[in-house]
Length: 354
Image (cartoon, rainbow, N blue to C red; front, top):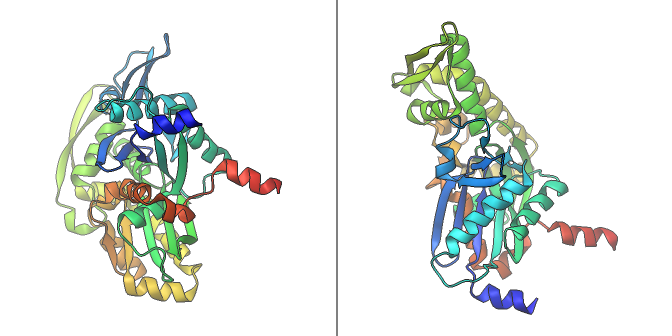
């Protein structure tokens, strides 16, 4: 324990947004130092990690049979424990490369989706501990996003946060440092990409890959009619001839592709508001709704939600980094913000034994 605390003095405490699509790392006193895809390339013959992050993402869909470029997190939850641990270790070591640190032993704050089970929470804690962390603290992602966006979360007033990540969308009403009502959906960035893949398949007989679908979403994706005229090229395999094919796809096509998924999102936002106490609904009506996460960057999404729920919707400044900035703020003031953290599985087990 004493050895750990001595090593801890030479370690840099980290805030981590461990996402399905990308992992962001905040270093105490320095800011965000890593923003890389949550992808790991593994040689299945030797079990050797070939690449992590940006380099591994370049390999997705292009590897021979003995190399797998995979995402170790699915829907915000660890699906491959060993690979997640190795990915975290890679990021921890990358941060500590600059300074003199024999064995990095940082304290780590990690953002997790709402509604994860105790087993899933423990998997995140264990992966971080095995990757070299000496202490692990968990925080719910919408809470971290609210803190990162400088909302007064500890006041007796309601704040509605919609955090749209790669694997999950968390809709949460926060008041007095806690989540009052919430829903966690699998309708998020990856689901939108899949909607584009299905649309290209059924309307153009074109099979496109995940990366191409994501590029289409980012370049011309839209939730409202205003951007229907945007267009880009979609390349893939013709399902009839089996040969390469390129088509022109417009904003209108993408809006039609995404309409069902966005409809589910809006419906669930309405359900969360319906189950929120009226005093807090009055606060939300006055303050508006905050959109965070990569999905918040979809053109016209704030306007679509605002039109449907009749409440002002604002997009956070730099929504992609809101969660990791929140973990960083918690790191800088851990003692006074400990009450808003998720109880560790170790503590909750002890609580159950009493």
